[in-house]
Image (cartoon, rainbow, N blue to C red; front, top):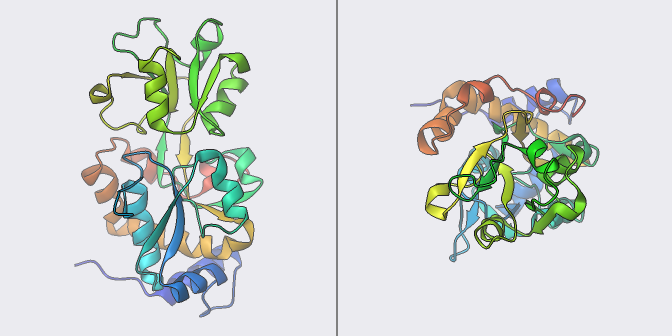
Length: 280
């Protein structure tokens, strides 16, 4: 039986690490979520990370982890709010949600405007293509060298920004609102590849596409995004994330329940700065 961490012990740890609120007091966001009885979270349809069922219930790896993080603070449930990727950070800033555990990669640009938790997943980007890889694409650099290739990307995603950084022309990009639309663009030949994290499309063969991991792409981390003023709550949840790692619960979710194969890489990351130096 796992020991349940004391909420005030977690907050004390967060204060020591992050210089936050006074010992024994809940950070403002955590106190507000506890009072409301739920955490409002932004999600988009991106299984196995997250999805919202017709019943309104959310499920997926990121949902499971977020629920485990807030539970010790007296927040018994999550209230998912469906949104598009490019609206997540603006919606967070407008206080439409309490946090964003939807699957945002930790990037330097995003770190300028939000506070990220420590990574709860790490991965490299890949290209989802038609079976057999008819254009012999290996990654972003190959797409950049072939101007006739169209690359689908989620609008406002880190993949969109990184493709442009690697030399892919803006006119080569096909911006799509969600994962399903990206797969449809490839299957409908409106794009020859769809750039996405290597674990972001469950069972690609069943969707009629094939994954090629870009071995030259940097290791990226997914974190939970908070408003900058809610960094004390972020720090408290980071303390609980360390507890989940130490107890084996996070590994159980990551490796056993959801089948992600790179636990050793995730286990080495303890802060957003581990995947994006300077991010705090």
